[in-house]
Image 1 (spheres, rainbow, N blue to C red):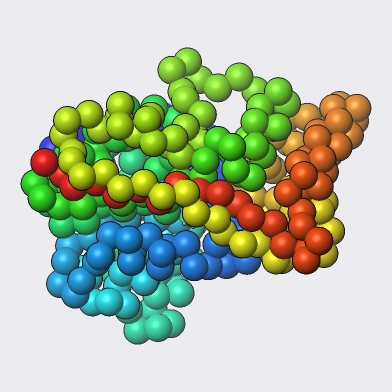
Image 2: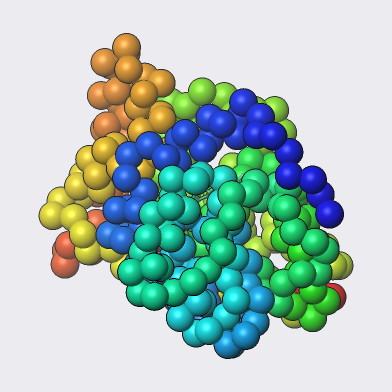
Length: 272
Ligand SMILES: C[S@@+](CC[C@H](N)C(=O)[O-])C[C@H]1O[C@@H](n2cnc3c(N)ncnc32)[C@H](O)[C@@H]1O
């Protein structure tokens, strides 16, 4: 088993980023059904041992527990796990909530029937290390299931738009939306998995009254957007320029009926 190491300064920063703002409100407002969709795609049944990696507030863990699975919800950010635990308890559900880095999971080899992640593991910076851990903790014949924002979709484009305004990533880190690319996943998992299914789907977002509405909501509530704006704090011109780039993105995706469609890749494989 990989030892769970003391968080590095990078992990501490990422944890603080995800604890900032109000991620529980982001998940509830924008992707309330995504975890259930992933649970359905993985065919989870009662009694299965399920690991949700980068579970946040339990968007996928809680639906899996409702089915009767034995669920471990793991995440880097204890504040989000605490919010998830409260939500689960209010429904009378018992899950294990475990602080863990996706790149060094504190679980034995082959110990889960299903390992899944809903727009979660994609945010671990070192993709191969994280993919190796998903494979390691899944039992032979078990399922690995992922929902990941695609590079071409709305959130992929949001990260592309924020890139030029962001501090440089640590050496070796890869962009999160690459997990939404099927070929990238095939390379990460290699011949340790079989029977890949991949489907591009959309989350329909109807929470905003204007194309810019998402930007103002994200600036206040979504850790990665808060972090980028914070890094620009002294530079009003760059803040205005990023505001404008994000408004453009909103306009490109906003439809006449007031919705926008945010593409993600729903991907499952069987552990060989
Ligand atoms: C967009 S949220 C998704 C949360 C949840 N799965 C959902 O569907 O709402 C991304 C999550 O990844 C977690 N995360 C980021 N880097 C991580 C890492 N290295 N290990 C574990 N969790 C990580 C964050 O704490 C956050 O909860």
